[in-house]
Length: 221
Image 1 (cartoon, rainbow, N blue to C red):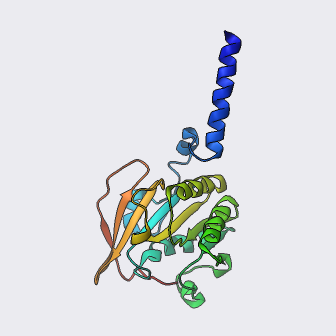
Image 2: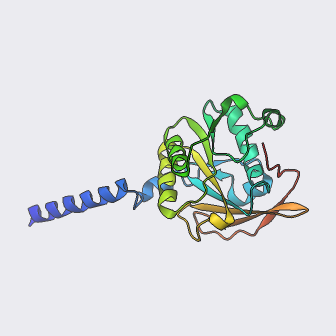
Image 3: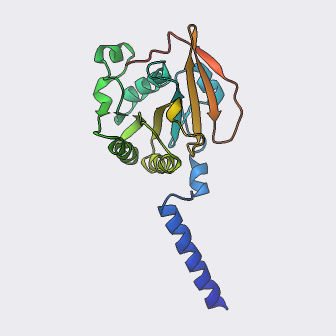
């Protein structure tokens, strides 16, 4: 009987390990270890609502169109990390080539900025996963044309392995209806301000939308 139970446990453990390798399940204890790690966002409203950007995970930023201020949420973070970490801030497939003088005015150390322009969509997703895993980047920001739940899970695992924070910025009409990304934010802009809706958090907390001044929402860097 004891031998039978032992063999049964071994078979079950092997199956669980295979599922983990395929990124179909997550180790809950590991998720809890990084749950409370936060990086200041540099934007008062975000720090008040989220406590800062969550570390070692991925965040989805949904926007209605390119150039409406979606990257503005990340400029204070990029500035902070480029000046306090010896690691890269990787920008993968940005729609605009960052303008060095503008980055200097935002106090961004351009020597820490790594720009990667892959040839195609699959290469872009591969590059994002690899930079998240590499442990050489303090943050990875990507602009995919589309994303699905399987890819989001892979990026989430890669961010945890690489102990970094990842963002992907995606247009609303390409964003999935649901996602395994633990955090999802939507950015909308009108004449007066940039509105932020937090659609999803890891703990399922409901947060009211808020707005930031358009002077903060500089869409191009």
